[in-house]
Length: 353
Length: 74
Image (tube, rainbow over all chains, first blue to last red; front, side, top):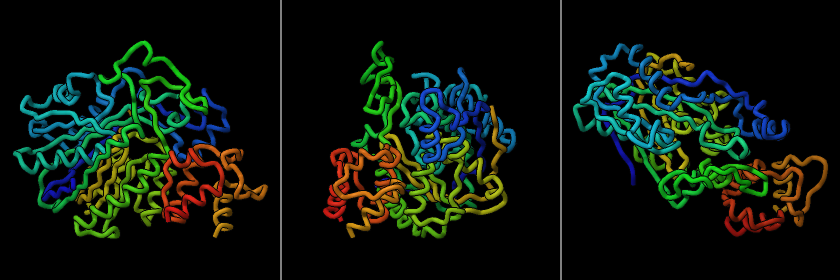
């Protein structure tokens, strides 16, 4: 089982940036009748999203978040020895965006830098990788960047995905400190469900072609997309989440010798309100301990867990000790959960870019 | 039990203006759409502890068939 335990490592600061460009979901009606849009938006509970304007990449959002965090925390850049960039919307197919960010941020050439490409589970996966490198090496400070421009992946003419996704980027500093105590991770994967959420074209299996960028009607509902747009089978994803996540959390609590009620906050991937509310209900959680930002930012894939922390828990984490449960799930299918201690975590004010 | 399930389906689909029957093809209801598909899946999971995948859902048409699947998976 992909169960991991770390000691005396934690997140000491976080910052997030979102595009200033705001989409009012109820008025996102250029391709569908207003009343259909209202039904969908009511159900998914996403009132606004942020769309990166042309030319703005995930890395730009992460860069802004990182610069703010470094300046707010008065971090000496020469102390950053590791940079990990998480995204499925990188700047280029090569080189890795983390390497470009090392240069843009003015970090030392001795910085270890690489990208991680997972979706909604990636923040928790990324944390586990950073924690393990910090635990085993001589890294003073690690910078974890996580950015997505998911608005560009989905077709605005496919109602199954047109109203869900938004853009954002975050930065987190991870350090050793005995105040953090033990942390626990559970990491999972199930590639047999690869077609639950997928982009078929534009990779090396089905390369970009004239045909792959042609719009097609893809189902009996008249939804339209190209082979290079993402698609999602909502009912299968829903079933997956409501059956796998409760099991995973049970395993994690058991491994960590913890109980559900010991957690101060439960931060889930922000998929859509309907699914998140049902999951919280099924897990019998006190909803006042389940922060959410889905209404304002939509589903930002891997960014949604840290964006929820930055936008909803700034005051709650300041000067206090808290135990958080994090759980991310999605494309792959891939899912990961973690129990982490926070102790006076610095949270910068949200940046609009 | 069967009567209760019928009421649960009716409530989940927010049907208020008429009675529904076991023989109905629920996919022909005006209220039926992909969003209500999730509501039905959630209701069955919550009330009966059974998860029905979308492939199974796509093969059935009547409320009776839905009920029988729950019964055989309980």
